[in-house]
Length: 556
Ligand code: ACM
Ligand code: ZN
Image (spheres, rainbow, N blue to C red):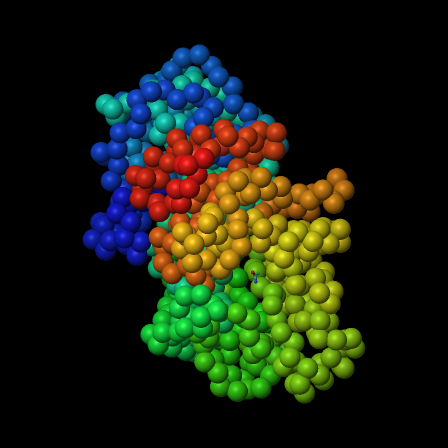
């Protein structure tokens, strides 16, 4: 994408990073070598430059010529973050050093507060006229940022070989369809360096996605520093080998593998994302997928047995016990987590928790009796409800995978529907908020092209680009009043079979682009062949950024 290095040494080119760190304002982690980039000199038709497609575009005759002599006037309505972002993006991406002017005059780029104060927080209007460019939005929202993104998309499509821009005049009136426009990344099965996390966030920002779901703990690695419990990362962040190749082969290496993010690094990511109007939702898995935590602190399980951080992929019987000391531990962990993540949601996992150990554990069986619970499903529900109460008491909302419906949903929980859409439908009927992320088509770790023999090994499944583009997050089964509980949807990138950042990009792009249009654009404005045409046009940018996107759509 636009904001990072042409050299995709994903873990980062140290020298470049050091130079960039010295820059003021937004520090784009990768210095992008854009100076040599020459896009088509032709003016592109006005409605073929955007992904996702805006709500309304209207052609106006004429062209606005943007060059280094164009000024920009913030009108004191842009936040400092947006000001820095715009300055850096013009500079790094387009080699433009436009001067900021203190009064508006014709021929400038101008930002103004929307007259309509009831406007959506993420809405914006972009007017490109022969006499100037105006972006208007609410002062307190993300609208200006999205207006800037759209302007950047127009510029990228309208660059002259001389380095100026002949922008076709148009009016854009735009707002997203959904509030939750998410992408997820599993950093437990394979670990990805901080620089790549930022690059991933940059990709989300480019497509007006606003939620980064960071899967930070699992059986194969605990990836977030918790100061009160240092063994979580000293022990839990490292495994003594990894599964190699297909699951059926049961092959393993013996290499020590792991890594974690310090709290300073987490804050850096959260701030980086916030500057791009992206909220980071951390996932701390419980009560299942807890092997790495238990390897660090064996008292957390029912058996107390010393176990190792998992080398294999799958679902494991060592889960958190339901005794009080485990809740004390988890509350202290969450206390540190919620101090790091200012967003309203904490994801607690809740999926794939075998009940075997609970059935044989005297603490868990006592809990069942004391709380008058019918079975272990209700015990899981007790667990999740207790955690929800804690999070709510700290002003946070809880979200979990759809298993949290089993045994009774916690009173205010938001459900992330992954085993199809039925969990999401059930939750919406119960008047709970829902994020749709059904395996089909939202799991981007699944194959995207057939025959799969020619593709890098994946976990299975088949979610081609077209199926993502055709996805409708609001199920037909919901009444009009129930539909409002669908907050949006999310693409998930689980990394059992995704070993490095380039491979993440291959699986995520362009499916992420298709999802962005599903989430931003009203269905009547979507059009598959038009989307493919825009994607092909915009791919020049991804090439220049050396994004390792999957190229199969070029054959369509
Ligand atoms: C999941 O894929 N286990 C949520
Ligand atoms: Zn137990």
